[in-house]
Length: 284
Image 1 (cartoon, one colour):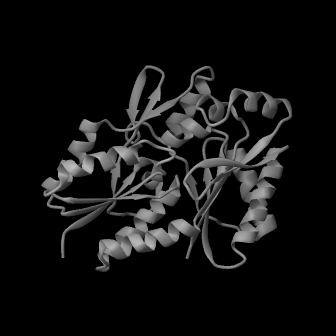
Image 2 (spheres, rainbow, N blue to C red):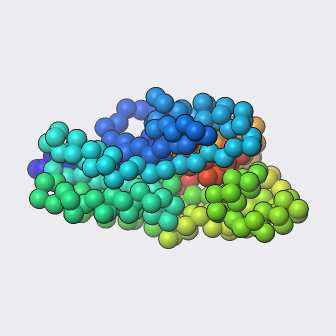
């Protein structure tokens, strides 16, 4: 059996997973003003990132993928450790350039190691859960093909939905047009955003208040979970009052209490804004 390892991106949220794991993290970068940080709690953790945003309301955080040189060094370090098969779970190719960068690196490693790149077509902790599932299966002796087959099934049935109380970041990062921002702010519209089957973040509903967005997500959860069991978790960025209200809605209307809650990584929050809240559902 070949020596194998699973790799996830720092967008996966596995830095904040409370249990030990053997998954390697490929780190993106966060740009705060004139400073660039590796997306890691060691350099820019969730709380530090939120504090910077709150202290710099006129500045926009940005993100950047690893450079080609950094990618080569990352994979060569795995080669030095003796790994022959590397399974990389990436954020949606529609949301990050990193997927294509890794695909472009693969031919350079041909004959040295086998790199398998899996596009999660999702984001946040759903990537992390896919990576955890892949690692568990490989440790049990399943082949890479069997693992990716299982990941394809998970991907097909996975759901990620979120809302934002402030559209500014989505607009400035190109997720909504300036005209959309004008009308949304004018009419106080709070969009329900869904990651679709192609891995794109799309506005699923335009809603008048943040609470109604929460209730709309609650309704969708009820419909999705009616036909099969799901692992449900919540996501938060920086506004914990909004997140708590969302948690209370799910407890009251869906009878879902004590759900796991995971912070959205700084790289993703740079695009969603610190008022984002959401939910992920993975099939059991």
